[in-house]
Amino acid sequence: METMSSVLIRRAEAPDAPLLAEFAARTFEEAFGADNNPEDLEAHLESAYGEAQQGDEIADPDVRTLLAFRSKELIGFTQVRRKVFPACVVAEKPVELHRFYLARAARGTGAAKPLMLRAREAARELGGLHLWLGVWERNPRAIAFYRKSGFAKVGSHEFVVGSDTQTDWVFIAALSDPSAT
Image 1 (cartoon, rainbow, N blue to C red):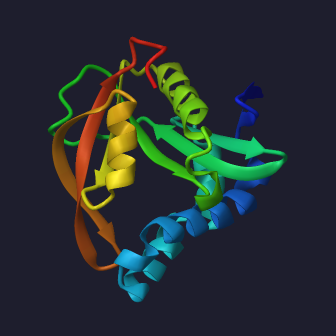
Image 2: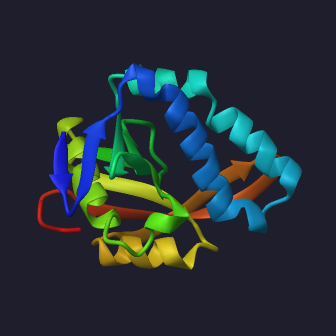
Image 3: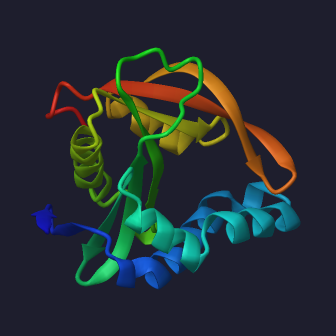
């Protein structure tokens, strides 16, 4: 466990799966619910954030799930993973920043920076030299944060929410600079 800026960040464990499943679905809905068809959103939440799936991801040796707490309350999480990457990611040894979410109340509090630092460390633990991610083209707040954190846009790929195919911009950052956030 590690404390940064009054944020405690630790790796998720099997008993965390129910808490993570609820939190992940809630934060995804907070971020994207107003911009998606309710049926598509519900289908996505069911397929992406179930307790069993979160348990499998926590146990997967190619995934690192990190939980961020403030005063014992879960305020954020991130997942990095080794996965097949889109063709626009041409960097050596890329690891995906698969998920990066904060509760609405934690946005703007400084909690994102230490969580991003730990995500970078986790990607290096997985053998990564670069960290890539997909971010919805209609999410300017996240895009600004990723750019501020040293990521650069290299392309795009499709992301499906229910039956709605959307465009995610693909960003990448080198992991060689541990001070980059």
